[in-house]
Amino acid sequence: MIPTMNPVTTGFHVPFLDFLDASSAAKFPAVEYSIEPFSQVGKEQSAEAAKDLLSSRGLALASFHLPVEFRKDEATFKADLKELPRHASLARLLGNTRCCTWLSPATDEPVAEYTSRFIRRLRECAKVLGENGIRFGIEWVGPRTSRTMKHDFIHTIPGVMELIGAIGEKNVGLLFDSFHWFTSHATKEDILALSADQIVLVHLNDAPDKPADEQIDDQRLLPGEGIIDLKTMLNSLQQIGYDSFVSIETFSKELPLLPPAVVASMTKVAVDRVLASL
Image 1: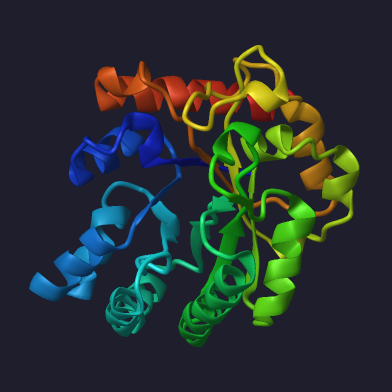
Image 2 (image 1 turned 180 degrees about the vertical axis):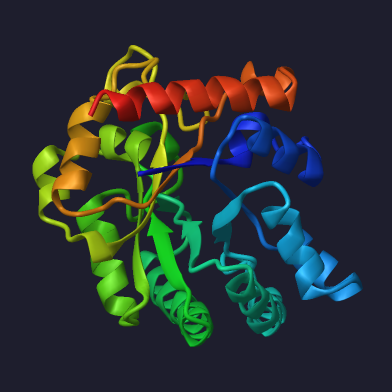
């Protein structure tokens, strides 16, 4: 598996180049990041200059965040979708083959309308990504404490797999997150029921010592510091053949207060220790 640095862990306040430098200094082979800063360099300078941001630091772009706001009004969605081919084309030139997003686990809207709109919009995004050879990962959000609106929405592996099936594009799969696996009461068997080609990306993090139903989405620990059975989870992923990027996404109030180089180094030590135990 390939350790990947995620900007959530350092905090989004860290400037783009500082994040890349910190990730490189900590000897991460890959990063997960927004595509927009790369696109800006590609537009103002060249695609080669955008590629050099990674290659000069010995980094790969494991996955980029979907740069389309599909949760709001139709005009916003259409405007962002219009720019997606440009972003996706550059991402492919950077050697990237993955793009991911997440689903809110609750809504105040009528569920049928909400669901049908998301299927349509995500399908349109998937088609553009697929035309550029990019797989599209969709993440479910597990914590019960995040379901605070009128209606529950997708918050389990079976639920998100149903949505993926309804989208119906071959390049759409699962963004698998250890915290959401734990908080949605999923099991080893849920992983073993999947195939490696159904998983686009893995997020790795840990949970503080309290029951799954009391976990808070933005309160997480570095891998190996909490109570999630990461060894069983990762061994199960290996058993089905997943051997690609694992992005360390640790929401924390404390880590972003530290220098990004320190956070990246701590994160690399943590993930290496967990992977070495498999």
